Image (cartoon, rainbow, N blue to C red; front, side):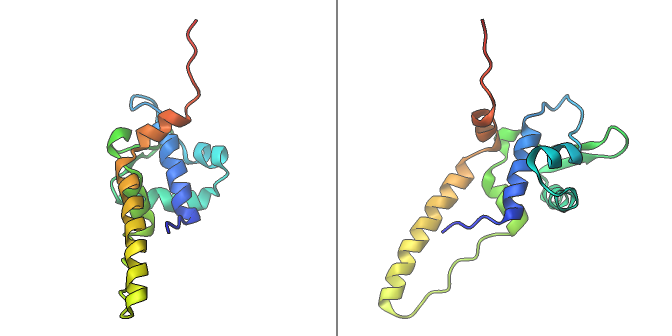
Length: 137
């Protein structure tokens, strides 16, 4: 079954937070993300560096610096975020016993379904779902 590390969950929260901001806005400061989501700031720095290395976020230095998404949120999937933090999931080692192999087939199908959801779900989809509704009168 899918196991999400705390680090990967923090990465998803950070990416979703960055998705809430438009590209023409100032970059988001680490402190703002850390405070909003109760993520230790020093830990968040490490996470954002991994996301940057994977090409998912970009940073700007200086007094008005911070982070933003490296590409539009509708072109970043949760699978990419998870792989950037925890690496690609290793397939289970096949067992020689026939019952164990049959069970491994079920687990592989579960993994494939999880992978399908993660690769088809973009950051933009979840950011839109999580955003408060805009009321027009």
